[in-house]
Image (cartoon, rainbow, N blue to C red; front, side, top):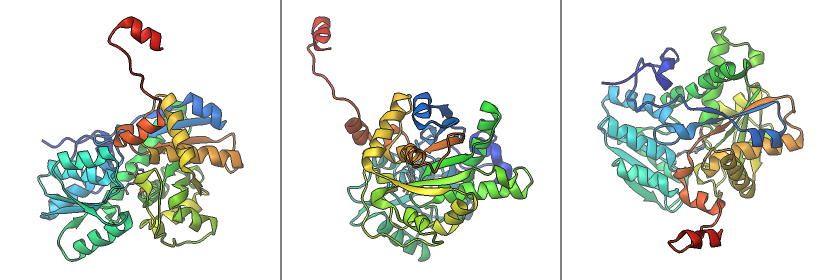
Amino acid sequence: EEFSGDGVWRYAAALPFDEGVTIREGNTPLYTVPEIEAEADVADLRVKHEGANPTGSFKDRGMTVGVKVADRLGVDRLACASTGNTSAALAAYGARANTPVLVLLPAGKVAAGKVAQAALHGARICEVDGNFDDCLDVVAELADRGEAYLLNSLNPFRLEGQKTIGLEILEQSRDAHGHLPDRIVLPVGNAGNTAALYKCFRELVEAGELDKSEVPKLTGVQAEGAAPMVEAVENGRDYVERWDDVETRATAIRIGNPVNAPKALPGIYDTGGTAVAVSDEKITEAQRMLAEDGVGVEPASAASVAGLLKLRERGDIDADERVVCLTTGHLLKDPEAAAEAGGDTTPVPADADGVLDAL
Ligand code: F0G
């Protein structure tokens, strides 16, 4: 019954299994975004839209592998801490595997679409009086005590699946214009994707499939109110100091303790990338710009585009670069943020003249 050979599982050779617990994840579009490309003034700009995954974020790529491992192990309970998307994905994949799911969410700080997904897919949802990092501390302890199988990005099998973002970007770029991207700009929370992409490219170099000079520069973007990775990179450090107080409209990346930093920072340094923090205002602006090119994303995803524009303005990114921005989650994940960023509605009577009068 399990389907393989498409999307993420097309790359089974780079994964620990031939097939996973699948809802047909991966194979997401690499869009052109003409208006933003012109604004950014780079040689080529594409947007890899992970919102097109089954549950609307890149988390599905990790869960298809991670839940398969849990299935093989025969665990009784899957668990994660989450700013929302991980919980939505785990709830769906856990349902698919018939394994109970426990999710710990920071109370009042998770976007409505994500809670709705976790609820409908039948996860047990606990709202914690604390932020995401507190939730992760608790769920890691539950896992240590043998009470649950942890499916946050601390779980290395999650990152194996997320490597396929890098494989798709390389293949799609080559197909689109015959060149590999010079740079990948992505939002950073726990830095799982940054670590996964770095591992993906390292493995390709080791296999002789990619020259080291061709590895895209990994460029991380955080919100100003939650930017411990940026602080580390700006100070040339190989470790991150935890921020206890974090705040941003981009609740998906409202994270003060990026647990994959030890794997991600070497990726940023070795590829010649960088990290940058952007304001919530710029994130909203970028969300609108993407929407004007027809691409609907949640705020955290728009951080990648805001980061590109800021680095380009600073001269840290050159005009001759080919860039891919990763947009990690779908617009409908956070309908409130989308409605606020968008235009107003107009009340009209139920007749054509009334509508025309109001326009
Ligand atoms: N973008 C979105 C939409 C996310 O949901 C997340 C992480 C990130 C970016 C950051 O990715 O951790 O690989 O650097 N969301 C997690 C969650 C924390 O619980 O859904 P990262």
